[in-house]
Image (cartoon, rainbow, N blue to C red; front, side, top):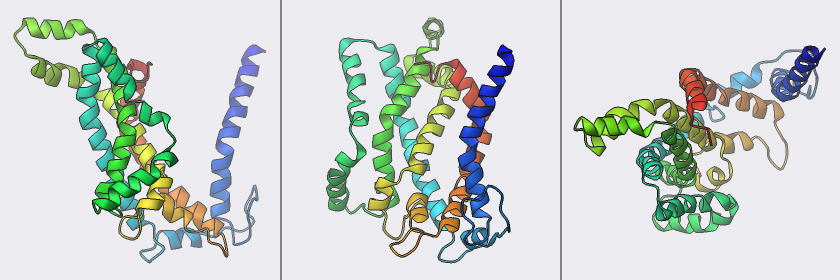
Length: 268
């Protein structure tokens, strides 16, 4: 009886979680005007044809912009968070602990509170509506999370491995490059996926700091809602298509994600 109740709870949670996605799919393939039906009366894929077209309303340029910006931000976070997290993990002191906690002050502040300062900074250096401008903002916001995730993984690597390497004559840099980095590859996968997802779905800064040349997916999808009409089917079709890169990313790093989560990247 207890096992039956367990499976019933699992089924209820799955239905609760997957129903919005099911509603998204059904509405996006329903004929115009058929919104909110559990079963579509008439299938119509014209919205996908319009979204996937090469015209003005096509999703491809905006998808490319999102991938470029998110990739730049993710690479920047990984490049800085790896040595920083390793230092915080191994060089433990009151000063280091204070600096480590100081990184999270930025994460504690609402993104809206920093919108005006970021606007003046990027406008003064001519970085509004550029790939580097928006990716740099994402890099700054996600660096604390990258350090936190990577530190948790470095903490799970036995310090004795480094001592053995030092006994054999390896220096600190070579030990980090040859021993620590290969062991932390699963942590890199976890960190990169989390950072990429945040950058990929972020809307506020993307809608303010992209105008014409670097518009990303969230503002593109939101643009189907105007003061005169809300084009639900096109919006939902674009949202569904926009999940494809994330599905592909998860398929590529799924094995490393599982090992990273169980191995300590999200231990803390």
